[in-house]
Length: 259
Length: 331
Image 1 (tube, each protein chain N blue to C red):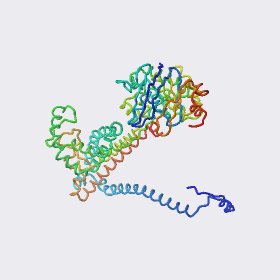
Image 2: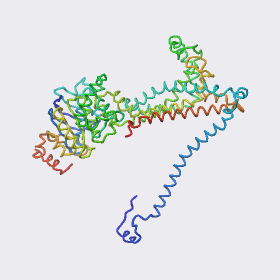
Image 3: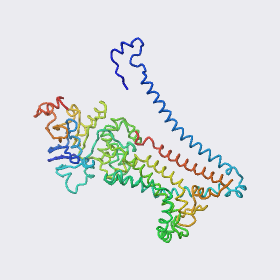
Image 4: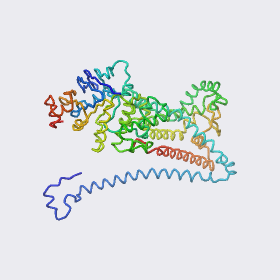
């Protein structure tokens, strides 16, 4: 259920503008990897290349390799739609489908793959996914009500349930707590701690305490200036990055001297 | 909006109790502008209601002699008993509009989706302009085109449909020799309805939240699945509104129908014959020049029926839009 990601010499472009330059990294399975860095350093862009969501934007292109357990996601003949079915994504702002009920939202991805599941199997998936997202107890009596009626934190957990219902190999999270209050943030962070037993998790965050709390590995990105591409500066064990990083610039960033 | 309040002004006007919040001449001037604008806006809003009320009053007052006249009088001085006379035209109006929408709406949604989600920007924009340009063609031109080009061109097709598919009730009966049938009229209406329906659909499709489109794509939806998951449900009220706008135009259209076909008081679902149901609008236009007295009143009363049909259609649309409001993308 959980696979390893190897990124090799990855360059990411918006049209002619190079947003990310020469990134090479390894993301271990069943662990949480955090991407940190100042705004515009390309960490969200890089995250979106890991499930080929980057190319959804007009003129966006990618050079280099992303291997999922040795299989190149950008190889010839690879269908981005199939890639996205294996690699789940949670976005910055909660985005449950407003026209669907809570139950339909959880099953949204499943029905794309396989519309003819028996009702009992569907109910099982809904319950397991919502339990997995720590949301079951709160919504079990209103599964047929619209998902948009939930609070922001609940909506975000619904989106996580929707993603894990697909039993993905990897779960990508793009600042999943930035639109949430501290209590909801705590709930999501606890959840991340549980999910890493099953999934490979990559999380982009602006909140360095959050990176320190939830991640096993931290990757620090930076840009030389406006218009310059983002680069991977340093990557290592979270404990090490936050206590004795190798580079001065990393230390400056995590100690709040810039960014 | 905020005026700088210096320390001096505070101490100076301190005795008066309200330093810095005292209205100045500039404030008063702004208030005047405010109320003038409110008056204008309210006035415009009221005007539309007044116009609507006046139209309704005209229809009721001028039509009531025919509505109140005994059937015997209408038979001699009018066009015959009112309900029996107007019913086929009401049917023709709705039937022609339904046929037109059945053809126009799928095409309009298709074009709108192509422009909003499929076409590269270089093609999408010009295509949008061309569609909007269709709306600028006068209906009499569409009517001419319908009679002299479309009817002639489609006649062989109608014959073929009539010969091979006459087991479908719509295509039964004796096929028209001229091609000037209600189906031709409906095609012309469909072309006329297309621009308004397409541009409105395009607008709502473009407004579909990026957030939900990405959610669908990230779940592994193909482009079409993404549209079905995130765009169409969001756009549903807008599509209904667009269809209703188109329906409004199709129901009231006169020239195109009057020029393409010579309808009568026929209630039939057969679309290929020479016995076509006429529409209310075309009937009024065709008969009004020679009408006098009670006949005029009867035509106005028919107009009232058309007015009511349009009203009911619009209310129906409102109801459809409101029915699942809590699921709409608005929240």
